[in-house]
Amino acid sequence: MNDSPPNVRPSRTDEPRHARLLALVGCVLALAWAGFRLYVPPAAPLPAPPPPALPAPAPLVPPHGTPPQQASLAASIEVIVGRNDTLDRIFRRMALDTTDLARIRDLPGIRQSLDFLKPGDAIQLTHEAGAVRSLTRKVSETRTLKVTREAGGFEAQLIDNPVELRTRTAVARIDSSLFESADAAGISESLALQLAGIFAWDIDFVLDIREGDSFRVLYTQVYQDGRYLHDGDILAAEFVNDGQVYRAVRFETGPGRFDYFSPQGLPLRKAFLRTPVEFTRISSRFNPHRHHPILNVIRGHLGTDYAAPTGTPVRAASDGHIGFRGRKGGYGNALVVTHGRGVATLYGHLSRFARSLPVGTQVRQGQVIAYVGMTGLATGPHLHYEYLVNGVHKDPEKVQLPAAEPLRAQELQRFTAAASPLLAQLGATATALPAGSAASSLAAN
Image (cartoon, rainbow, N blue to C red; front, side, top):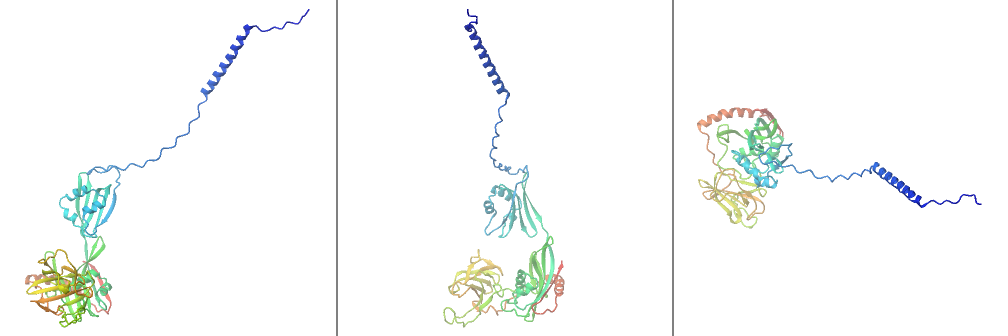
């Protein structure tokens, strides 16, 4: 008899129970994993790169007449006026608003001060993207025009810039030339030319200057805000030429009109200039029997030739009218000026004529009428100058020049009163100087 227990096999009814247990465990694990994922946050994403920098927007230009609401971004420029420049050309060249120019020009009482431009003038402008904010220019030595944009439009004002005149005296002895002696005395070239112009009717500064000649001058210097600007006018002068003394005093003959007279009240200005060009040399004198250098024949030279660079200004010897202008045989380009009383002057070999001087035009003594050249029969640049009386040629170097009108009795009395203190002040520097030396003194007037 077998006592071991028999092999017991689970019944089929137990198998579903195991399956359900396994399914339950799987669900628990799935729920745990899902909870874990819900609990752990996702990693933070990397920051995006910054966008590229954009240029700052251009500032808005306010409408005309509207003041800027923010700090001004206006640009300042200075324009130097060139030849043939106008304000319209300048505005267009600088890309400025020409409508602004029209509005500025419409301002009352300033158009002449605004539009009259000379080469070398300076104009200061401020603008914002082409819209004018201000315009400033010096109208004269003593006045400045300033235009500004205000809330109601443009406004203009003329500002006075007063100057101070200081009186200076200088004396020098000539050992080489007028200009070198003037420079040694601290006198500008322009003042030396003025000095020569005063005595031009009595002294030929091309031919007559001698070593040992001397001069002294009383003149003004112009200052502004304590700063020297330039030399002014000669008030009185003395020139000793080859031992002969010439003196001159400046005198107002009418409103804004000045001339120079001797201490006795006689006018220094003659009816004719002695020479129609400044500071040159004579290359050929008056000679009725001269041998012509080009034609190689005996042909009279009925005038005086003044050698000078091409373009040197030629001035009318006296008041008159243009009687001829054009080509004239061997003279080349020539001008004839008629002066009345049968007197005429001829100017030949000119490079060109001054503008706006057709035949019949009235000219004043000293006015530029043409320019030195070498047209016609000429071996080099020079002015050929002739002086004719009733058609007869006279030697320009020796002809007796008629004087200008003297002062009348009433004017002479006024002149004497004005001249005395000037001559006394001029004489304060009358000291003997060795050749080539100079002295000067300065005093506020």
